Image (cartoon, rainbow, N blue to C red; front, side):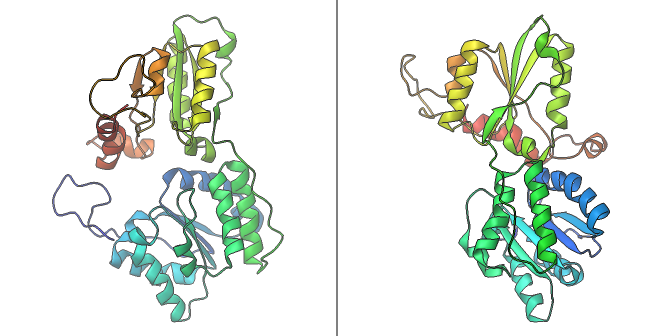
Length: 331
């Protein structure tokens, strides 16, 4: 589907046609995940430029929901690439225009090789209709991005180089990355005597996967300056029983005085309204068992320069994800 804004205040993706200005390149990577694009810029950008002498273009996929933008991009950029990789959260339902344009340019002689991968951790068989490769190979490529992390992005780059050499075998296996874990301390503050308390920061695994950690590191440094010890915990979902067990285990040894969370969705298992017996296991959130303040930390998907230049503050979609959703979805 595509959505066009008719009045101010709509979400960011509900906007009028955006011109997608990009020059052609050997490799195109189109993704709905800003963190993934940032990680690829760091890993693939250097590798392909220096080692393979290949040109690379990265683009946010959301503007391609508009039919005119999809057609323009397909005709002027996509059709001239050697290889194009798509990672689309929402699949065909959200990106029918650009996916249909793939079939259109191929029917008119475009030689671009196409890989369309799901934008989540779940396999989407419908997307195989738009792939130029057999399912085992597509699943292999998907595994690099599903697992994530800098090492897997490097392995994906190796696989891309093989594809460009028309090879479809000999791909390295993706490395298994834990779905949750504690950040290694780089500041040395853990060895210092606590002055003012201990704070946990919980954030999405995607940031750790792609190495886009500037906001977490800046917040950690700021808290350290106030004499606070900081422990960072990343997770795919705080609903995971094993992730919850790990947090509770840590709390027994090093209980937090406060938790700052950059996550958006409810992790509660109890009822959404009404009272809960304090002795009941059906609690609103397992974090209540830690008996400390849990503070929501809104974050922006914009880069720092864009944030500083934008007089409106949080964009509508960021406000929805970091302010509205946590308020309405519960704790």
